[in-house]
Length: 88
Image (cartoon, rainbow, N blue to C red; front, side, top):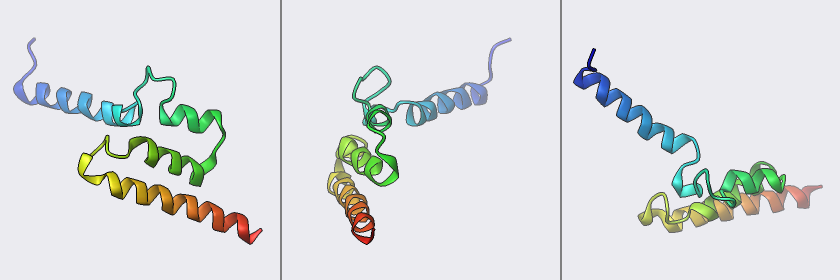
């Protein structure tokens, strides 16, 4: 039985969403040794430093118009981590 137009559209949407969830290209992609999540896990960076690396690695790749925003987010997480260390 052939899929209806709506089923095909849903399947396409699910495939597109999977690419945004599982190893998206703006984080390096599954085959990239330096994909953000792999580096974050390998270096055991934790939340704040992990997000710093994530936003730096995707800056301008997920959305070219938001490169500066991504870098500011990275800086925010880095500053947060530094402030946490300074309180210890």
